[in-house]
Image 1 (cartoon, rainbow, N blue to C red):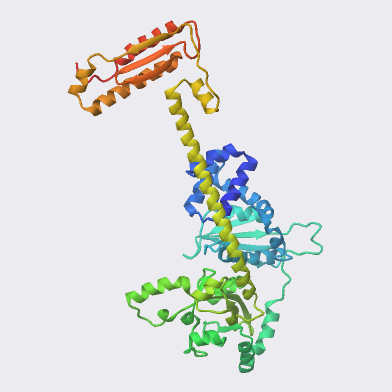
Image 2: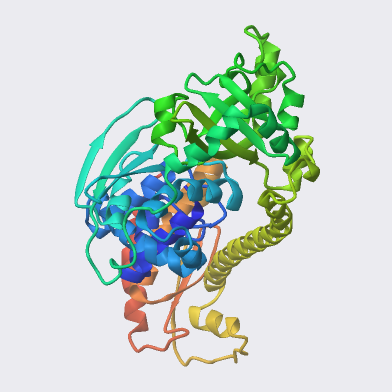
Length: 512
């Protein structure tokens, strides 16, 4: 999923439950703070679902309720992050808005973030009673509560469809009367398909005349029969790529491969998704023919990322006998033009794709700068954390060399004056027969013995609030009453000595 989705998760939890709750969620989800919501990054689905599962565990609600809460927050956060004007401009009615969601997701995936993700699909059916049936398709199971909350549905039915789709949810949407009902309807008032059909009937009947007009306009027009046989093609560019195209004989799948939406290439499927954006990939020479050597197969897979794609819309004409696919080249950057051996002159001047390419070229430089800035900020944060850790280790080492009060004063940059103490108690200890131990045992065993012994001594010293001066070999020196004066310093040192004798019994003796 997009990093933007993770950022919206973070905003939801921080606003409603606080930062401490979010940190607990990150710990359970095994995310390091600062890396969980990078907006320009793509996170694997398992990472996103792990984060949502952790949210449910910490907050104490089922995962379905987490998605419902997210659906309620999503619209608010989307409006706050600059998408409000775009969403308001999609359509004047709910049906048109829902029909546009599919193409909006494609635009965000492939143009804005350029991640080539597989987003959800939507299609809407207007009912005679004025209600709408919204079909929601997704590869990710269990996300339908987001749409349910956003649409404020009254009925929901879930079912599984063919292998191309993992989840298909149907929502029935009824309009609630309000002050806007007088001048805005839930159903779209766009031009009907019958009107479009009558306008295009003459195109099929006057094929040769209209074809020349389309060719001169540099538009890409496919006229298909119900059996997906090519009845008309108006495109000099595609005819140049496929010179063997024959009207009435060539099938669409011989030259095109459906990329979006992910549905079977059939008349019924096209009818169901006729309000969606259709993207086809042009088959190259490696795709032609029935047999391909293994090297060609690998080249074909490799070239899919470089293949030329076209996008447009489907229209039924001539009493639903034909389908007209009106489309244009699907390129968004100068780099894509170069990689596909295309030029701006291949796109008609009035086509907004030309403007999109040039705008994207300037936007990409800004995106690259922002990405570098985010990377630099992330590196600086990592370096700051590493510096903080090293500073703590330095402070601990400094406290090992001198009393903590003196170490803190030096750390603050202050000068420590020499002090005199009228009385103090000092204890020296060493290990009996330590020379014999060193001569009979390996250095590794001797070091382990001293580490075990001194760790026990250090714990006792900390309990009785005396100061360890130093350790040299087997010698251990402590002092009481310094640097903090106390009247019972001798008693404290004696208590430490008794504890040392008791703890030394539990140390593994290397020799008798």
